[in-house]
Image (cartoon, rainbow, N blue to C red; front, side):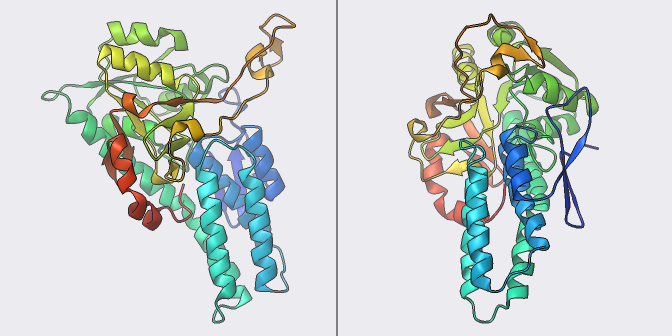
Length: 361
């Protein structure tokens, strides 16, 4: 049984506080949009799919108990609060796309004379709540498609050694995971020999979260520091690198956790295929290339401290971008719930994305 980072039952929303893992497993109640914005911004919940789901569910919790005088009033409230939630973390595109889709839905419902205020509220809430089940189904599809693609590149019944970065599992999604979903699928097929996960400095999502998930699921794994990636590729016969994505541009350039770009460069040098696993909602066809992706910068303290303990010299300045952009030329393919695509094929996705990204994550 995989971990649950998001609990939502009877309009009660709780998230697993990922700042406390792996030392403590503590759930925090999210009572509305303001709580949703805070847990996303503080990284108590993180991972592009999970950010979108928690943000939208925080609005659902708030709307459930609100009374509106008209459909127009409800539509105005929805638009304002969703736009506020998008500001919590700017790089991950899933929240933005979910917000745009839900605002479009609210507009359509408010204009339809056959839809009552009560119907509008019920249909809107149901659409948001369906995001949880859809995300898990999408992740399992990503896992299966990714595992088959990787296995198509190995000989016979060879077992795979996978290198991954940051956290892309149950803790970053509604469940199962994207890149870690591919790893879970290979493990279920008994075709996985070993996983190498980076610690992912400065926030240690790999050491704190991915390692935690791998141990929980009894998947054979080894933790390495970020600076060991080249050595691992040289000495440990890595089959493939699989990472997630916070935003994929139309040309295939991909923004992901800082440190991803250098892994892709090293993979190219060592002849190791480098894959991105992400739902279609992480593909932003409105952004032509990675040069146009806004990169969030985080506080110095994430670099200078571990918990309350300072590890850096006082007075030193820091540069702490949360993400970097991997050029499409370094990416062997992008694994989505609808199939495997080479970066240059993304421009053909417009119709597919419009059909399938409605409030998904």
